[in-house]
Length: 142
Image (tube, rainbow, N blue to C red; front, top):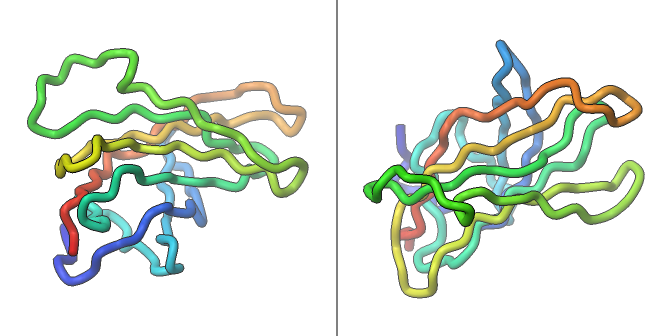
């Protein structure tokens, strides 16, 4: 499913995450507050963009811990650079985790991305990993 008329502007905010059957289903808005339709793949972003961040404000029992990214059409072998740690900013109720998908300057491609959430107890102990489905991001928009 794709919407060829809308080009989304990174970074993205994860606005909601529903969890079903051990999988996380996030909803996103772009930097302009435009919602990304559920299931849209690839997500077309600004042409030539060199990074697309995904930020999630921590919930009492859910946090974004990282992601795995791979260029569609390349060999599927995973290397260390395909695994992205989340960076953390803020504190208390404003603590946010961000995973940033990089692109080399001047390279247009489609990247597959699986975000990885951690379900925790309210005291922060790990309960389970929750991967997302595989949205793709394409940096060849207008």
